[in-house]
Length: 194
Ligand SMILES: [Zn+2]
Image (cartoon, rainbow, N blue to C red; front, top):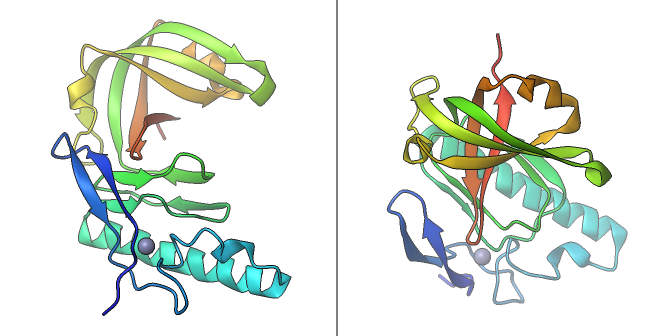
């Protein structure tokens, strides 16, 4: 069977080394790449085809997300061209995405206790960058603890400006998630649900 020609390398957070990535999807009928990796797939000139293609990509992504959650395996969406979408779930394994796409991810989280070191507000996009010195990181709901390597270190998280009040305290307890792609690793945080 023919295979998508997309290959690259990425930083693997589980083995902590750079590893090759090879796409195993089937290529499009008239192309070298699969519909996730074909640059032009979402840019068809016909609006109804554009819509159909976007739906196909989102369905394909949703399928992969569900598989990642149920099979507890890492999700590799490296180099994917994606329409604006959001995926949600409780992930047991890291997620790999390209940073340029607006994909909202709510992955596995660690229960983190941290000291607030610094706050920087970014007025133009209503966000704030918070530097946290991690003093404790427990598994949240017994998932693998991706934050444990950051105990004693400073991480920067991005939060909505509306959540700044929460960081008025010297010490905070919140849920921190890690997601990443081949170039960056992001930390996102949620205030712990009661
Ligand atoms: Zn591919």
